[in-house]
Image (cartoon, rainbow, N blue to C red; front, side, top):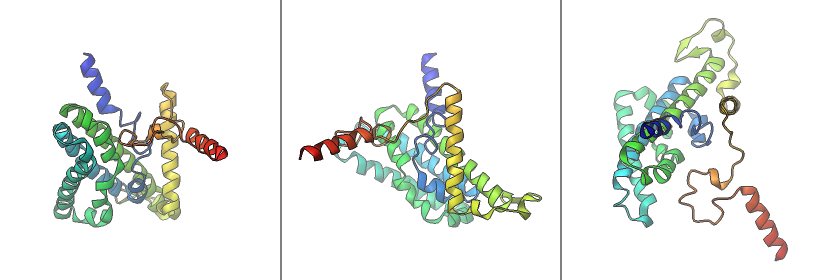
Length: 242
């Protein structure tokens, strides 16, 4: 029973509690750049989720074979292979979405969500758990991008998934469809998720220290387990002593 609960927790944590975009604040660039519409946000999210699931499975299978010193380059090669496959599939079957997302499809290779989950989870857990982690994190990322894209499309163009809505389409707020509107909607989405976490007895993330970084496990610096403010105090103290 406990095993089932733990697997359920792995699957669901990425949706709200550890949502990669709205809680961990990873993948901010595609979140802001590809959410001009709901279909673009959903397309980007599903593409990243497919790469995340497949790369998690393969990296989990190869974790004991890959030498520790070259694990990051090996992870990137695995991720790049799946990104290329997704890119070809989009170009062949959903060419309009492929052209709309443009450069952000190949840039999935360097998406910190995927590389972060490979380093922090897939390389340390079994195949089933890694697949569930990929599904959960990918689903959370997809839902975030689709939600933000839907709000921006609705308010900025008066449409939802390309379908025009009465009155709203005649009085759009164009700024919401532009970059400033993207930041505003993104901030509101973060606030909503933090409110949900707080109302359920959880604790929103307090800061942006090294301990909250998805790559802290592979970072060689001494301060990966402390907050940025503490590191700044240490640097100031060293400067004063010098």
